[in-house]
Length: 404
Length: 226
Image (cartoon, rainbow over all chains, first blue to last red; front, side, top):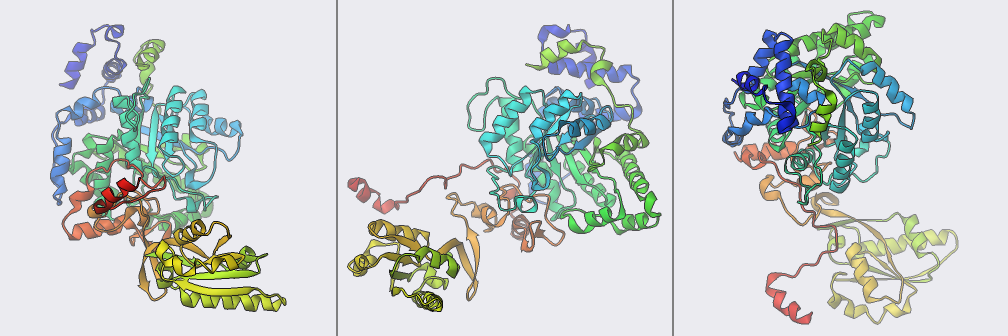
């Protein structure tokens, strides 16, 4: 139905109505048809076109979510591009998306960013630029994001609530968007006590869910949190994190629902190792109708070594590493463990590709950016879709329209 | 109750350095109850100061006096006449009391002997735990009587964050329960989880400028004074 509708619209001259969102949407569908739609792509598109809300959870809250999400406008929202970012276009087109991660340097050396970016270019649909991760000072995430744009990669600008109040956050969002940054990941942030300035004052003026809501208000209502109108609102594709493994497990999917209700367009999960538990979580999300509302990207971090796997298991709160994976790494000789780690990651990616409700993977190859091309290739994720050029459209025209 | 701790002796010695006649005043209010600044603690402190000074052959004239509370003018009347005879006043009240003393006797230096730590409760004798950040906009009715501002390390209003450990403790410290894990458990037990299902919007912080409170029955009275 959606496809037919879109095809009839294709005849409308691109420049006339000038809504970039519709144009891009039409193009993306056009491409999928053109490029020879695979069964997988069609099913994912149709999958995202479902409008019913399914399932009831065991709390009274189910009614709340059902009422909240069971609005006819729900999927209509998904039919228009919100930001025009590449990541949004890829997800929307039904391709299995992949994002990477790039940690900014602990200094001013631009070459570090360029070098890391070179490994990721053409390998991922967008790259997360971390924001003082683990509460350690680094080059600011928006500045690094701009460098990444200049390298021809699309950034996913991470923002944590620990370091800025609502004034600074909104100011940085405006600045980031003005420099061509179109994706954001809204996070609470690791607690300052883990970092290199453990006694700094954590800001936490707002929390991650309130940040999501603020970015959505800025984008969709063109207003600041304080209510004033924005002269040229930032059109961000809004991301959020989810940890399917934190306690209380049964509440985690409800917290995901809160993030979706607040305005998250896509979710990147914590690193997944316990596939059984993840499957259970995604099933719960699906039963609550959430996977129809938000693109969920499964977090993957390949083990580089046995000590790293043990560290993840024992030292990182909220991480769930099953014993059988540790055993599997132990079972191969030391110098082959990195390759085994990559093999495990690729097997996971394969499973995610076939898992209902999973729209892509978020590959966090921590300080292992140079391995990303190998992993992406080995996981069969190449080549990455090039939606804008596939559409055969004039990119300059498109970028003009996206300024709307 | 307001909880305070005594400053290290060395710091107090630094504060009183250069003053020969010192009036050390205890407070019979909160700091007395939390065993930091009552009558007994004033005596202990002055004793420690004297013996420390004696080690280096020095001496100061210290007089101890404890009043009912250092946060109400009426309790100071009995000691008003004494203050002018001293070079400095060492207060063992909370930060509010210290300032109250300083405003009442602006001609003499007032020095704090305590660090005011938090608003909290007794866990046991001499053992206290923070429970309120006096944010001015209480959410306890919706969070199962567990304060997310005070007890969550990130003061999240829509928690828990991704760092809750498998045993339900906080990522920051394995000895501290995750506030939102506790909130979840309590509300689940009361079958009231719907309270935390809604997104709680960004709050209007009300503790950013100095606040005053006039209780409703007294509004007319102080309106006239103004």
